[in-house]
Length: 146
Image (cartoon, rainbow, N blue to C red; front, side):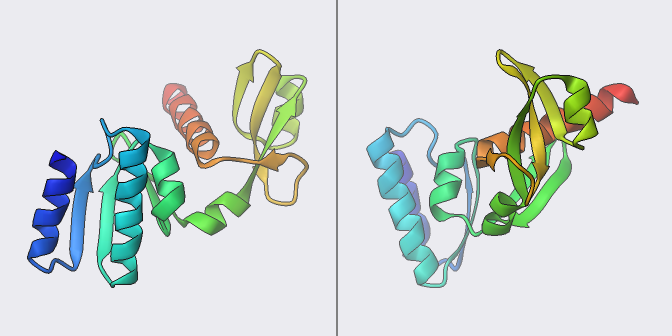
């Protein structure tokens, strides 16, 4: 109710730009869906909404563009559609196989290794969560190397 009230208050002033910090955290799934529907409606009315969130499913519903910040660094600034088309997730039997394929953010899991490969390569569509995880994994690996 506090989130709904805050949004109603912000809109009562005819705001054309909304800056929201974790607006859906603590909301149940139905309330999050209602909130995302409200944001979508605002977008159609010409309101610009910038919000930070860790809930990527909300971004999948309403975002046009993704900015991914990690430790103050901008890791990604991309239209959501083109970002999702840019990567595929591929599983590998070994790290050397993943490295040879030029995979990004290679991680070991219970079924071998996985990493992001470029569009057009063999693999399945990567989710926004997976893209962010593998980009962050790469950033952390690079950070440890320096």
